[in-house]
Structure formats: structure tokens, C-alpha cells
Image (cartoon, rainbow, N blue to C red; front, side, top):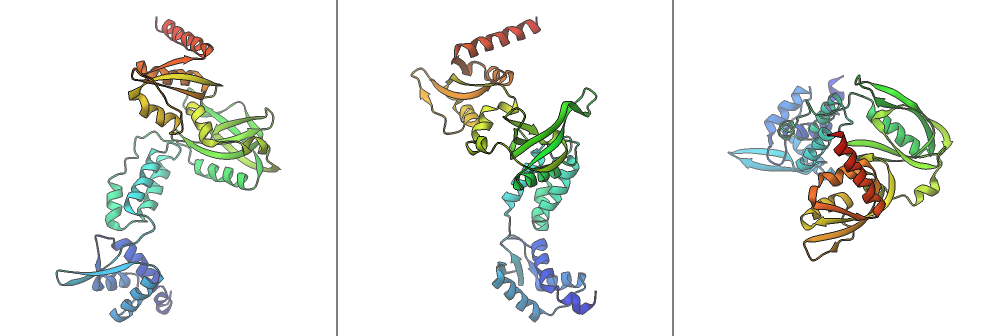
Length: 329
């Protein structure tokens, strides 16, 4: 590229230098700015750079100057993301099981590029991706994009649905070829992505783990289930389906010790109705999917909770306890 052409890139280069080399706590001198430009094969005089800084400031880049030990420093103090926000994004990427270790590291590098070199060092100290539970399937994010496109295009999809085998490999499950599926939403629950969809054959709303979906194809056929999803509440659905385990939906009455209020709020949200009792307990009535996962959650809370009704649910819970007792005889 000719030098005259590179000179036209000076403003872009200055933005890059300020983003990489400065932040609210670190500045750069005029001599250092000129040296950074020279590394990019761009020559500039101080007077021209002063004018460029004024131009960038007028365009919305908040570049401040300050003096320290007799030197004048310049720094970019406004950014698209603040450091706490970038740390939050790094944590989210690290915690996501559906993102592979390789892709996690790639994404974190891109997040670091939104920070100065000094802030990036702080983000790097947070990185503990190795040995975390991560998928080995590299294309989950592309599957998410394909599902989103089908939703935006109002198209049904077909796909293959896989399961783990004892050999630690994913194989097509029995009846794993899914057709005439109408995707309506994506949900992130328990560190996994799920597609919530309407199945034409059964007339039911179902959910599928995105990392178990392969060969996703939009058919171009308009989606079914519009009426069902007009009244659909994703938050309510997530509360009822414990960790994506299905079962018969029922209203249950649960009695908790007062100290368990945080557990209840975390599970059912702040809109759940609390019925206080005089002896240090409270009662709630909630609709849940009755399954072994639900019973396991109850058992895990120990004496902090008791199922008060309905009686068939109590009977089913007792049978599960008896089964477990026999299993460990």
C-alpha cells in the first residue's frame, strides 16, 4: 500500500492505538502515539495529531489529557464495554458447557480485544477453561444460528437427534430423525441451550438439546403451533420443567422452613405466592412437572421441605423412596 494511502488510515489507526494502549487508568504520550503510528508505517506531526484528537472527540470518542511528572498523557475513557461487563461475558463463556474449550478460548480472546492491554491482562487472570465440563461438538453455535434463521423465516426444520452411548460417543437415537418440527424459541437453562418447538405429529410443545441436534435444515414450510405459542410463557415453562426433565404437570402444595425462602425464590421466582405459618414455616402452591428429578430436588432439600398434596403425588413420592430403599438394601 502506498504511503499516501496509509495516511488516509491515520484516524482508524489512532482509534486502534487509544483502544489498545489506554484506559481510565493508563495514558499514552504524544511521542508514544507517534511511535505507534510509525509501527504502522504512518508518519504524522504533533500538530496534525492534535487536530485528529479534536476530530475524534467531536465524533464521540472521549479522549482526555492529563499531566503526570511533567509529561502530558492522553487516554480513551469511554468504551463499548466496561471492564466489569467484559468480566461478566468471560464468566458466561467459561460456564457454558455447550461451548467447546477451543471455542471458549477463541471467544475470550475476542472479548479481550474489547479492552485495553492492561484490562485484557485482568481478564486473562480470570480464565480457567481447561478441565471444565465442555462439549466436544464444535458446531453448536452454528446450529443456534440455523435455528434462529428458521424462526425468523417462519420455517419448519428437520434434524437428527443424538444421544450419548456407553462408549462416550454420540449416536443417532432410536426414532432420532425429526421432521415437521416448528422452532419457536431458544432457551438457555442449566448451562445448556434448548430449542423449544411445536411437534406437528403429536401436537405437543417439546424441547431439544441443541448440542444433540445434527443436520439441521429449514424446509421452507410455514411453522405450526402459532396458537399454542401465543399464550406461551418461557419463564413459566422453565419453572415447571425441572432441568428439562418432563413429567405430568400438576399443582403441588409444598411446606418449607422459613430459612428455605431463598431456595424457593431462586426456583420459582419472586411472583410465587408465600403463605406464612406461625411455627416458622410457609406454604406455596406451584405447578410443576412431577418426575424423579422433581422428587430428587425435594429429597436434596432434606427436612427443609415437605409435600402436603395432592395425595397421589405424595403416594408417588413414597413409592420412589421405597424403590430407592430396596435398591440399596
